[in-house]
Length: 597
Image 1 (cartoon, rainbow, N blue to C red):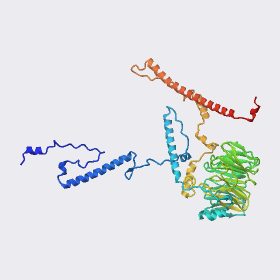
Image 2: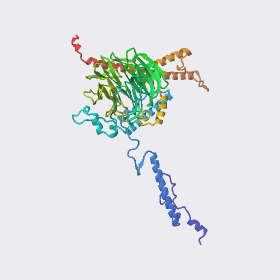
Image 3: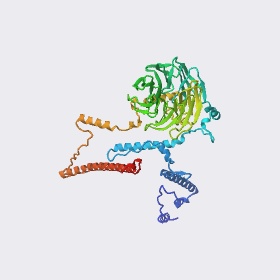
Image 4: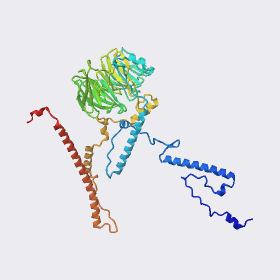
């Protein structure tokens, strides 16, 4: 039996190596256990091994999560070779670019600086999202392509209907309505409904894709024009005497006697305005949301039977018998622009959806393309019989009606066109023609009724479901109508350049500022004179106060010097640019140089 002293000596820990403290980023070691506890029994050894294994797995998992948090993503235990979002091509980003970056103010106006930075971040994010979502657009526009030495204009509508699918083939059809023709044609904004108005009083609404008749009436007097309003629930009919409003069931809602002898109509969807042109030379605007006349303008140019709208800025274009085209807004009693387009009377006018190009046809048998931004002609084509009706599609195809022949041209403003893209002959003279939105369909109204033609590549393949959804339900239409009324644009905002609304009218601002100064007797925006704050402990002595005044004065002087230097640099830059231009002009030889001494 050992003595107490010997037992104490046997259990001493003096000669053992102390175990280092374990850290969370280190993996636990296998041989780190105390020797006394390892060899005590087998059950404790197995439990300790299981515990070590669990701790090792937890440590590896924690380390992997920390690495992922640092941005090194793991796929099957390896880092991602392509970290971050996928790159976007530069050309696609430029397609959705909204505006250039705004120059940020110096020093002061830190709130404005912050607002500009947040606005630019939001705009850049929207640009990138639009560029990414552009890949998700399911449809693409296609055109008709012929074989070698084959003109696409020789391909008939029957041949196209035979080779396309059944759904597209049903979009080519004829309605024989010889008793009440010729017909005016108008499609709804969604492209689902068709409105026909016969010269002898026949008016019909059709869901042309399902061929279901919505309503059919005879107004018992001549019809000059028909036009859908903001939705397919109401439409306007310009009858012999007055303007009438009907619903989709054929029930007369209003008879507006202020609008008499109306010949042509255009509806502005974002302003809820119905513009009418009459035989008495009056251009009138009707607000259909409240039922009031907004403006009545006497153009003093005679009978107004040629009319169209610019979808980009809602300006009305009128063609006259003296060969001029005038541009009108409800805000002014005079024309915004007068353009001499033809030597004879103007027969038809149309504008593309971007508001860039205008196409006109006249009695001089010429078809002219104008750039509205510069009001200059781009192309001029001669048609042997002239064009009585013009219409532009969403993809830029131009249809021209000559007698009983429809000719469709492609890309008329970029390259010279020598032959039509497609052609088709109807039975009698054409009176109305219009492209269907979001469909490769051209509706033609003529003396024998109505013809729906297949024009590949005419319609926009992808629609905006929040603006014009062809597949919307009745509930969605009601919700859209409420939102559209809340977002209605006032007629006072119609102008040639819609981007002017986002600019500051500096002349008006300066005039208001001068009036305010006169009323108050002092300038509220003037910089207050610096008065040093009184400080204790002898820091407001005369010398220190003057020193602080000089420091502030130097800062103001630096700002003045900086502005002066910038103005001088700008003037010098303009002078060099002018001298360079004069040098280029002087280096060019002229035919009159031989007369110089």
